[in-house]
Image (tube, rainbow, N blue to C red; front, side, top):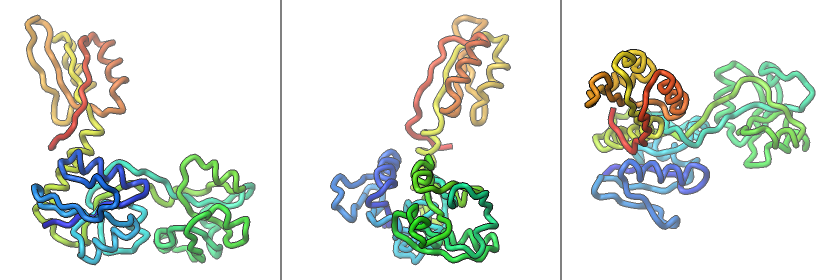
Amino acid sequence: MLKIAVPNKGSLADASIAILKEAGYRQRVDSRDLILTDPENGVEFYYLRPRDIALYVGTGELEAGITGRDLLIDSGAKASEILALDFGGSTFRFAGPAGKPWQIKDIAGKRIATAYPGLVADFLERNNIKADVVRLDGAVESSVRLGVADVIADVVSTGNTLKQAGLAIFGDPILQSEAILISREGSKLATELEILLRRLQGVVTARQYVLLDYDIPKISVDKACAITPGLESPTISPLQKEDWVAVRAMVLRKDTNRLMDELWALGARGILVTDIHACRL
């Protein structure tokens, strides 16, 4: 039976359970449950601390797990990303005392406070920078004012917390993180894991796309299909009105309203948008 790790708490927990449910897997209803068996799909789910998941997968106790890209890199575990899940996004940045024109090269020889020492150490090594990494479990923003560090590396959303602490962001992002599915590094994917991978990919795609249906005069169909080319090509069906056709295509959800405006201007009518709940592409 396939053993999969799922975050038991934190920002990734609820979204991980939601995507697994959409992919057709049973999930726990009581947050105190540590293990749940889904016999129909041949899977056992283990609810673990997000920071520990990569370690369990990397050592082979569990075949796969959902965690954050940041937590995978920070752990140093022998596990690898096999699918980005398009939720739980976060950005890691450096920040230093405001008023100084900081650059990445300026962190050489400095003390860097962070709750993700492995991630920062990986960045420093890849960029051939020598600096001291100070591990903190929280309140990283206060470390500079308290004299523990010279700069910090942390998750940044709006940056308001940093401004209140007298800090300013500098340099390019250290990492753009999100929830990911991981497996043991170099391992062959079991059949059940390949099925899980396809199902989750189907949900991720379904969340990103919608079906767009519209009627269009035949004389404009080529221009319309250029606007909505679909994944391979749009479906075109005849209508009772001989000089019109119906078109169906998958389009990115984020582009929906712009495409509807362009199609309307081209003469399309009866434009409809339908959610996709699952797919295999």
